Every structure is written in structure tokens, then in C-alpha cells.
Length: 409
Image (cartoon, rainbow, N blue to C red; front, side, top):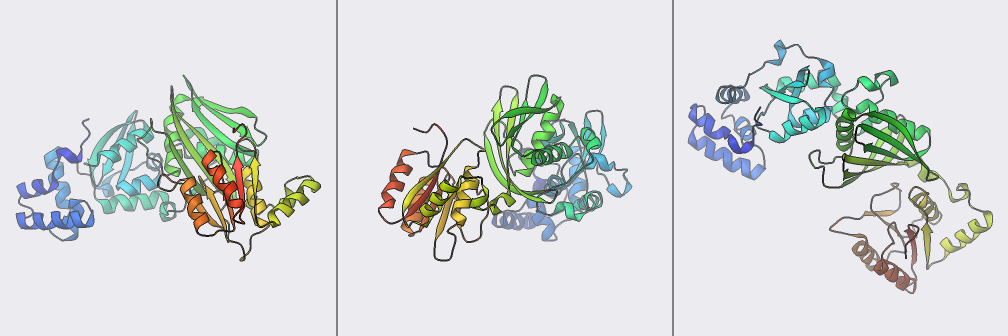
């Protein structure tokens, strides 16, 4: 089936051709569409110049697509659940039946080629498109998922373990491995496509890596799509590395997930780093630090100036240690600024800054200094210019706490 695109269909001209709107109405709608950044078909309906039913009628005739009334259709709830609710709601579409590798998809806007490509990416199916009313589509979504499932709050839901392999959407599979990782005290989960299988590996907090699971390679696409959806990543970008940081709920635990993708020989590999938010409540005295060293650390944090560096490998607890140190001096008398690639632990009283392309670590550090911050914590101190600036600031009566990887020269 040829994928319909916005470039090869003009709904305004089609409605004119069928004498369903006037040229003046079309001109007015185009102006308002440009100003509001809404689709032309939505503006035409909002202005009362036409109806969704009329648009579906002409599209069905012009594009030779079936016009389906969902109230008369038999719908398989499991097929509907093969695509996450947030995607169905975003694109106003509903899958109703799957036969072998063909998925029948009812869409309010069949010219949305990105929606079709996203569904292909998630399901791995060939798509057969039909037209439907958005009101009927949204009603079915509410019935199948419940309105709670469509809220913006990210909460990964559990499924019985014996249902994991039956779930073609990847939702249960991802939930299972994230909750297992929490149970086993794992710091990272690796999702890695191999030549003929999907390998899942866990990294313990001590740095050791072990294989946890291996599944057919057919699991790769739905699992990766589910992870990308969780992380608000672009589903269609696979050769461009992506990173994201999200807060979610696993069972009854609030958890931070740092997610990154990397294109490999066999497809996109993904790493999920797990940061439990309740770890931030651990005090400095509960980190297993030698009492003598602990006293020295407290003296250092009581100083008004100096540079402290927390070092160690990924997952060794650098961020947790740094936050425990900062909490020792957190008060209304100290302006504490953290500069991180992603915020590890949201903390009341801290000024927390995320590095971006527009505001990298160095530029954020310079501004934090200009704003006369008392204490600055830098997650990524592995740059000579940042190090030099930090040591210069000690002379200005400032306390700097940095993090470094092993092996930085």
C-alpha cells in the first residue's frame, strides 16, 4: 500500500471540488490555520464551514478508502493494546483487527504519514488504513484503556509474569525487566540486538555485568519502541544517538531512568540507568564511609571555599555521594547550584541546572559564578577549562564539588 502523505493530498481543494466549501471560506481557513498552527481540516471544522463526516466522505471517495463506523465494528481489545494509548490518542487512530502480518487501522486523518510509519515501527505490521470519526475513535480508546491510561503521568503498569511473552507491545516485557532490576539491585539494563536474538544484560552496582535474558529478535522492535515512547524519543530516528531522562513509578517506587540509544551493526542498542529517588534520602553517615574520612569530609563541607572531587566508575555512586555531601550544608544561608547532564535527584532548596546544547556545562558554570553562588556541584568536570575555572574560583571564597570518571588526565 502506498503511504499517503500531506504532499499528495490537499483537503481544501478536494472540498472545493465537491462544492462543500467556498473559495472565500477556504482562504479564511488557510489564514487562520497558519496563525494557529493547526491543521487546515481542523480549522475548517472549528469554523463550521464543514464537518468531519463530510471530510471523511470526500476522502473516502477520492482516495478509495473504506469509511468505517466503529459502532458497527467488532474490535479486538488485545489488538488495540498492541499500540500504547498515548500514541493512539496523539494521532486519533485505533487498530481493530490483525490478520497474520496485516493490521487494520482506523484513522481520523489518513494523510498523516508519520502516524502510519510510527505504527509500522511499533508493530512491525503492514498497515491497511480506513477512515473513521475522531469522536468514535477516542470513545473506543477510553473504553479499552480507561481515561486514567491517557494521562501524562508516566507510570509503568505490571502484568502477570506468565503474560509477558504474549504481550506483543513490549509493555509487559519492559516492566518485568525494570522491576527485576530494582529487586536485584541493578544499576543498568542493557537491551542489545544480536545476529539472531535480543540479549538483555544487567550491570550490578559493583560494576559486574551478566546476561539476564535472551529472546527472539522479533522482540527487539516492540521493546525498543516502548522504551522510546517512555523516554519521549523520536521513534523514526535510529541512526542518531538519543538520550533522555524521565521520572516514573515502578510498583510503589518513584524512580529516575536515564535512557540512551546507539545504532549498532544489528540495530539500535539501548541502555537504561536506574536511579531510585529514595536513594537521595540516604545521609552521609549511611554510605559506609570510614569514620575518620567522614569527619574530614564534614570539615571540608563546612569550609567556605575549596574544591572537592568525587570520582569512580559509572554506577559507583558518585552522584549519590555528591548529593549526600551537599545535603550536609543545605540551608537558606547557602545558594547551592548543581549542573548536571540530567538531574539525578530533585532536591528541595537546590538550584538545579540541566546541561543542553544551548547551555552547556561550561557556560552554566560561568553564569552560576556570576550569580555569586556559594556552592556549585558539577557532574561532568572532565574538561581542562572547567577544572581551571573551578580552581580559580576557590580564590573567590567559593566551594566547588565536582565529579570525575576514572582515568581522566
